[in-house]
Length: 173
Image (cartoon, rainbow, N blue to C red; front, side, top):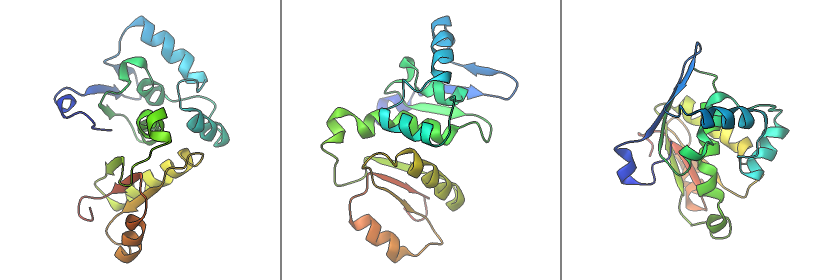
């Protein structure tokens, strides 16, 4: 999701889920207990994001969403694979929150993107932006997309101002 430490690219934490069974590199019984607790409450999520989840009607988190909030995943690069509709987009939005909204970042946001999300297609980039827009709506973060097939002048104007999270495709970026 978020590559902040080049050394961690060598050994990202891998979380994989299938419809039949949830499996994870986090196999301890402590993790299972924590997961059950997190699935029904949003205590581990940043307060702004927890508010957005509740406003959106979320009652529980999916396995993928609760997994990325586990202590063992904190400030780690994650490689997550799961089925369509499993909540991956919200999961990586949740996993980035500490870095984007932490006490140091909240009062001192940089003038350049803090996060860059690269997707293979325009449709996926726009879907990710739509999901993150509502998830981060309670914050003062500015999310912008840069994708092919859109008016480049509009994107340039957006990029000339403050951008905290940039979501785009390789060609346009």
